[in-house]
Image 1 (cartoon, helix red, strand yellow):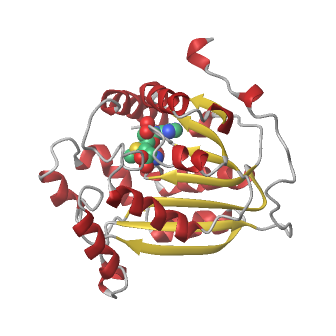
Image 2 (spheres, protein in one colour):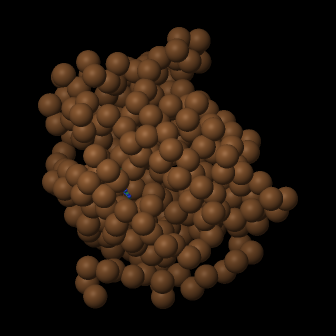
Length: 272
Ligand SMILES: C[S@@+](CC[C@H](N)C(=O)[O-])C[C@H]1O[C@@H](n2cnc3c(N)ncnc32)[C@H](O)[C@@H]1O
């Protein structure tokens, strides 16, 4: 499958899944304590600098990360191939009165997006393996990410860990299958570290998390996972890992140094 075909496939798939339940697609907008704890875990790992940040969310889906970050006062730019998911996110953002925290929406492939701004932080939840289907495309992705970061800015992402036996797991998860998720085999720590380094990023950190699946649905599993996160076992086999890297260049991030007119930037392509 070439990249154009992959984008078409992902668009159809996530447009179809957008209204589905129980697929972790609402994990951070759900009131469930384990879902909230999972977000807190991600933010604690990220250690974003204080102040109002301009953040780009690649593959934002229904806004599981973007919406809580808006609630914390940051300004989000959201990119996703699935217009149905973006529409759900936009409805939630409107309902929550957060439109002033939504800088821009781009419905389409991140690798084909011209962008035009530089960000304090770029985030992505389980998206690399949907965009990339080989090690080289991970390098292309990180080159683009690095080019869109301000000096001192950081990228923070969470990915499924290829060492987890996903092929078995998907036997019990009818809504997902290995063929659709096969990009996971390339989003290894090794490929990500190399791509980040080659793109001029430094201070690359990884943290494995979650031994057992379904932690987003059960607070007990979440708590067991958090406890096991401290064990050596988790380094060998965990469901996911988080990583972060910083754009070098000598600058020190000052979140408020570049003011932007936020509401004027909101472009809802499908309404125009
Ligand atoms: C597993 S979902 C994760 C959604 C969200 N980040 C979260 O953690 O809930 C992956 C998302 O990536 C989006 N996606 C897939 N390929 C993409 C591409 N080439 N450019 C931008 N988004 C893409 C999908 O539409 C989907 O919303």
